Image 1: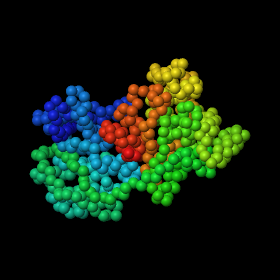
Image 2: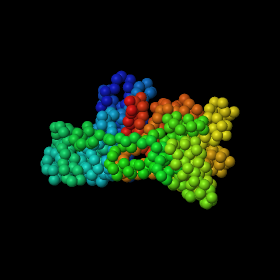
Image 3: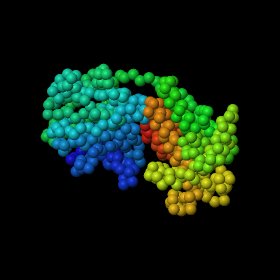
Image 4: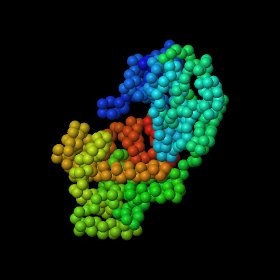
Length: 525
């Protein structure tokens, strides 16, 4: 199979257009392979892929970018990349006419908040295409809601002669993007058609504007021509999101442990959904702030790690009962005592919870950390987890948060990673409790996220930009903190917990950062 990619981009002298094909490496990580496109006029760019093995490859995902003097100058919006399904049986020559995707004005409709929470729709694999001459149409229609589908009707036999009953059903093969394969044998020199949406009750909504017309190229048997088209303009009402703010610590209830926690947050979200009082729940930062071991650490806006979660937010109710009956009774009395206070005692509550978690770690830590789920999580997060655990251990050992005046280990040393993440070493055993706590917190916040999605509630996390200058992030990679790459990696990690995030206006305006995530980015200013 031969595939020719085409795109129009008016590039100034010296600028080159690249086709970036996404591939997975042996470790399952996705990377882009950049291919130089060719042009004869500086505007129309092409690249031909030969000998594509469609038996072992179901699709090709890709995006376009430009370079100047060897440096990337710009790239199109990559929140959703281009997708070419290889569900083709009888066509060997594909000619694709792509469009350059700038950041859409309605980017909210492509976000996780909309596509996976408010209006979830399953992505489908297109059925096999058996035509010998095929026209494939691809169009984005992100405003469609759950249960709605996109159809095509048009002029001529191939499009059903404008008869709605003969309309062509499209497949949402990519998030917010629909495609249909049409028998091109019955199409003349041009194709005239329009799109319309149908909801689950059968109500039809036409797209705005005139009929679409495309000039058909000369085709032979075994040819497929693919046209990506401008977004379908279908008027579907979407109410403005109603946001409710929740300070997790203040969600304390009768059976809490001195402060509101992830379990209380889950109950709060369920209550919000039941009363239909909001569609978005925005919460305070959940990151670890342990630094000085004083009440000053109670502020959630001076975090030591943008990845690590705060042990204070652990729901003790989800941990095993303490096997020692006397100790369990003591902890229960302490819980009542802390809960009876008219305020949140940060230090006393944190000390009590860490004490409970140490006991739980002794009881179940070995079992948890030998589980497949823990090992998978550890492998996916070891980049930040190992330095964080080492930093936390050293901060406690030296009784000093300022790593600059520690007697040694004044910065993270990558060479130490191997022994610190090897379960058979003494170094690993010193850090094992920190690994265990972060895994427990991870599972609890993931549960909150799942409950929110199941109830159609968008969970918005506060990704504060206030980083503790003595914290782990600065200790590990001071020169990288705050860069676009750092923020992109942070957003990627946060998406496992949130479908929306609160950031500063400065971060929201960073195009490279905004284009790298499908989380809905909201700002206060």
